Amino acid sequence: MLRAGFDFTLWLVLDLVFLVTAVTALLMAAFAREDAYRAAEKQTKAFWLIILGITVAVNLFISVLFLSIAGLIATIVFFVDVRPALKQVSGGRGRRGGSSSDGPYGPYNGGR
Image (cartoon, rainbow, N blue to C red):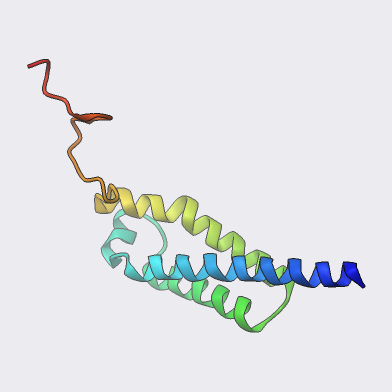
C-alpha cells in the first residue's frame, strides 16, 4: 500500500514536470518571431507550435507514459536545439545587454 502511494505520487510529480516544461516551451515558441525560425534554418513556427501543443494536450488529457516521454523528447529538442538558435539569430543576449567587446567585468577599453 505504501508503495502504491509512492508510485502514484511519483507519477503525479513527473506528469506535472512534463506539463510545466511543455507549456514553457510552447510559450517560448509562440513568442518567437516567424522569420527567426527561417533564419536559424529550423522547422517552421507552425510546426513547433503544433508539436508542442500536442505535447501539452497529451500531458493534460492522456495518461500514457510512452506518449508523455515522446512529448518530453520533443520539448527537450526545442530547448536544446531550437531555442538557442532562435536566440542567436534574434540577437537575444538575455537581460544583460552590452556589446561584443564587453568583458566579464564591463566594457574593454583597450588599456586606456
